[in-house]
Image 1: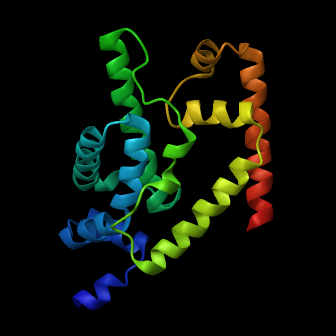
Image 2 (image 1 turned 90 degrees about the horizontal axis):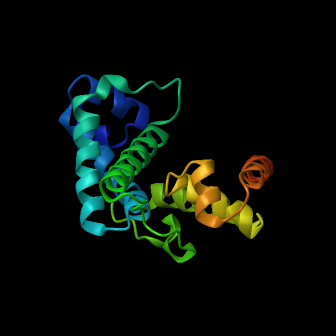
Length: 194
């Protein structure tokens, strides 16, 4: 297989090749998605150097445990982003246990994924990711401020609903209602936008 042909492989083919020990597939996935993954790490951790280290750790884990990916559970990008988010939240929780408080980055609307440049995405991939990002932002903008806030605290900062209630002073039952209604509205909005 020529390098030009390898460049045209889709993400599922890259993950299968990765599981067979193909180094090039790891590099291609890194080139394609490191920018958006780094943006997520930065958003959750709030520290650029720590985010860069986490990104390298995640790609090391992806290489060493390539057999973990199950295409029946989601796309490669979803898998990679879930891994990043999970590992970033683990680091925040570790900080919290050492410091005795939540040590995640403060949620700020001006520091969202859509505002971090993504140097590793090709123009065609960038168009697709840009469109998806635009649709998600548009759907998020349709939520009320309390709904958006509880989702951001839960997703980016990894707070449980009880922790969100404590951090915001909103009663736990209200937090649960905000999360449920926000997810229902997002699902409907995103289905209508497809």
